[in-house]
Length: 236
Image (cartoon, rainbow, N blue to C red; front, side, top):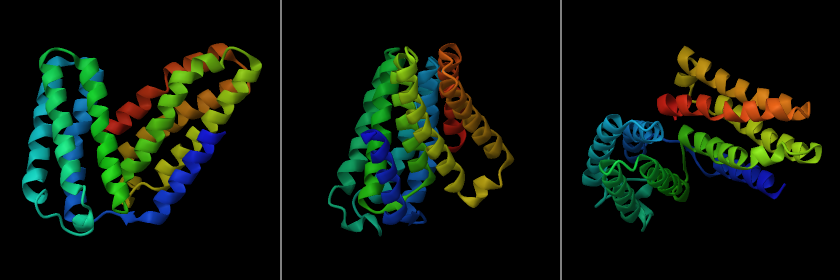
């Protein structure tokens, strides 16, 4: 239950600390996030050539951010003494991942690239900035816990009750994705379909856990990541 409480506290803080971003740094990071998401997706799907291409584009986009803002960040990042170091840290993550991709170590590169997401999220958090990606990240973090621990939670009726609780957190976070999406996304049919697929994957898992159906729960766990990954690639 402690993890469940922590997620609700975290999202409450997100709502209180900042507003949707409109500053030049955050807008530039949002634009540079697209090739980063592609690199994450491609390395996870073991696509060598596509991973190299996406990684090159991500590094180029991030270098532009470094060139424009590292020395003199605008509001609201201008009072953050760690701003430049955070930008440099993302650049180093990209450099390391690029080397791993070049060696064909795509799974290792994927894990390396995950670090950049955390650095960017922490940079925004320190400066009171909220973007839709933060809600996607919150869902992703809990989804990973469920995927790692879920199979063991199907081992007995009592363990299945724990799975019901964890999926309840996922349901809440999925609702946040709908309520916190920018209006442009809310009016986007493709986004609506992607979000509906994600919500359905969670509902299916919740129903199986509530029914104490271990086989159906394990099948639903296997189908949980796909809808998120597709949504993240396009909208995350």
